[in-house]
Every structure is written in C-alpha cells, then in structure tokens.
Image 1: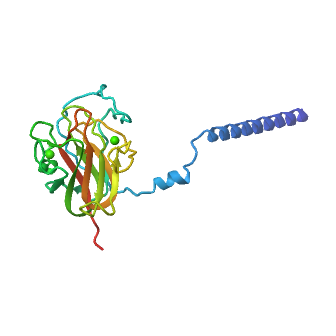
Image 2: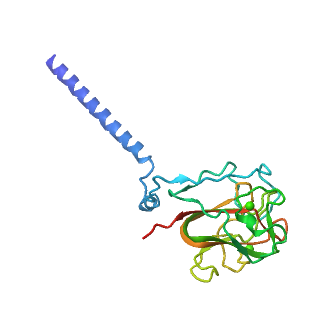
Length: 251
Ligand SMILES: [Ca+2]
Ligand SMILES: [Ca+2]
C-alpha cells in the first residue's frame, strides 16, 4: 500500500516536470517569432527629438478636380496618396515667412499675371490668380529678407486641371546669385535636361494641396524654384509658393 502510494507520487512529479518543460519550450518558440529588436541604424533614425513639434498651418484652396487622373503618361510619376496629406510637423516657432516677400525671375515681364502673385497668399486656381512665364527653362527667386531655418516649402504651380511640371528643382542659398553654397532640396529632373544635375525625386500631379518639399532646417535667405514646361504645354506657371521657416537662434 505504502509502496503503491509512493509510486503514484513519483508519477505525478514526472508528469508535472514534463508539462513545465513543454510549456517552457513552447514559450521560447513563440518568443522567437516576435519582431526583432530595432537595429542600431533604426534607432539612430528615431533619435531626432520631435517633442513639442507642431503641424504647420496650411490653408488649402478650392479643389478643382477629384479622383486620380489616368491619362497623364509620364515616367517616374509619384502614385497619388489617395487621401489628404498628413499634417507636417515642424519645430516650435516655424511659421509662414514668404507672405508678401519680393520675387525676381528669369522672366521679369510675365506673359500673364505678375510675379507678386507668387507670394500674395492667394492659392485659388481661377483666372487672375496665376502667373505664366515664358516657355521652357525658367526660374523664380523669393527673397525672404533674412536667413531662416527652412522646414517646408509648398508650391502650387497650377491646379485648375491635373498637370505634371518638368524639371522642378528647388534650391536654397544665402547668395542672391546662387553661385556659392547652393543647397538643392528637391530635383525631379531625371535626365538632367535642365543641366543642374540628375534629380532623384519623382514627377507628381499638381493638386490643390500643392507639393510639400521638406527643408530639414536648411539655412538660407533666398529660395529659387526652377521648371521647364509641363505636360499640357511649354509654359511655366505659379499660383503660390509658401515657405515655412524658423528664426535663427541668436548667438
Ligand atoms: Ca498667389
Ligand atoms: Ca528633365
């Protein structure tokens, strides 16, 4: 009787131990399927402290068309997001710094409209709101009046109908002649037909949202935007350019 009871206890101990080992192995197998811990590289991309960053305020003009146009055949065309552009975060103190600022251009006597339309705050696509520059390679330059840290530039070329503008190149400099220390923050001239170097950015279709180009805090007083015709005709157009910058911290 005593022997029997001892043997039963042993069986119970063996059974419990077996269950515990099996459970432990199962747990390890599940743990192995979990996503790997972030690598050093992933961590470093996450180290920018964006505490206190806020969305920039962008007032959008009336949308002139809806849906995704299917009939524009252009190489390396960005796929539309299919939903509104998410808010763009920038450091505290970042604000619109281009409103009413003076413009010069490779075409100072536009065919339609006036250069000052580009920074007058009106982004509507109606007649009388856009400036038309001469055909092919042209540029406009905004003088912000002083140096800023530039976080975003939004450009509306023309959004009455879907179009793609070619060789869109956006540069920031402290030199009004753009001869020294020029920083190119956007370039979709994929074949270097403009002559400022091959760009890696994609073509895109103009909409009422404009094109937001990230500045990443690049410093400069002058913003220059190039273009070289569009998918509809050989002309160059601008409705508005908004530059969002932050005052430089005094030393
Ligand atoms: Ca305007
Ligand atoms: Ca090109």
